[in-house]
Length: 385
Ligand code: ATP
Ligand code: MG
View 1 (tube, rainbow, N blue to C red):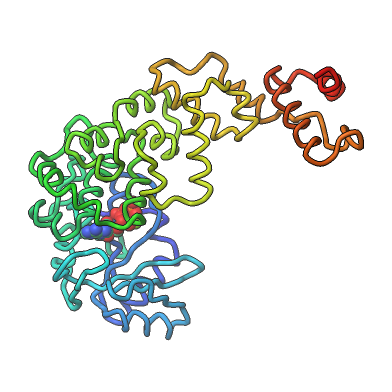
View 2 (view 1 turned 180 degrees about the vertical axis):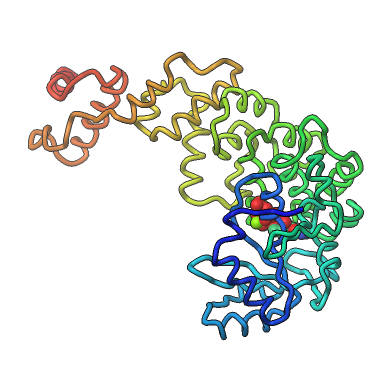
């Protein structure tokens, strides 16, 4: 079995691999890049595994004039920068205890040991520089069957790192076969340890949840999370029922993890998750407008097209009613609309707080009239009122 693609064949990847192999070490692409290449899915970043120890990786890179950044030195990871692209180069290792922040790792392991410390068989796939795939644990077969299988005993692997519970659902959402459902034994282990998710950092939870909810159809995985009690331990009070309806109304449009998060509801996810300021703003606009009747065009004028789209779709899902006819055109109209009054149009008759209040009232009137009144009409309306 071989993989190919620009991600592997480009000169930066080849340069980093050659750096190691020219010095007599093994260098293999590993994990998501190999998995995605086998599935013909886009490869985002290339991770490299090697039997060279981290300090050797650093020395080799620096001797070749490449920057080596100790991004995860405790885990044996050095980021080597080639042609402006960063490659996480991680030394073969086996985990003696845990995986997360408190992992104690031993280096000097071989490829098989390195494979055994990975979470799922489909993530324990390696490729040499020429594309030859190395599959020590039968990951290709599981990948072909779109079957997510823990490396080793699910229960034991989960107690080493509780984040694997969430990764189980995340990878199932991304690469599993929804018709097949999830492995019953693994699911039971996830359910049994679900309360431990509350001990994980917001960063790690959010990174997984973001990818899970961005999958083309996360609904079956989220339903399984709800059933096993996992959902509740990440998002207290969240409900999965509206999610499949949302995915239906989305009709294949990409992205939108915040829109999916909004229809799950529950108590203040922005407090439990580590979201960016922009994400919190976007999410709050969506959540706050869900129950209000504000029409699509007005939402688009006030919050922009993306937020308006999320609100309309999320409302449709929660109310189990298709989005209103012409909603896309309405959003385009709202995005393009320009409020016709400028502060100077009302000055010097009005200044200070009175000016602000008048502009605000005029804008509300203009939105309520579907952007129809021009400046003169709004001034007349203000004069009347
Ligand atoms: P993505 O394309 O979403 O980044 P990925 O497979 O690269 O998918 P990462 O989270 O970037 O996933 O992890 C890279 C690799 O490291 C995984 O494929 C897996 O082999 C290993 N790995 C990451 N996190 C864990 C974990 N918590 N337990 C065991 N192995 C892990
Ligand atoms: Mg990755």
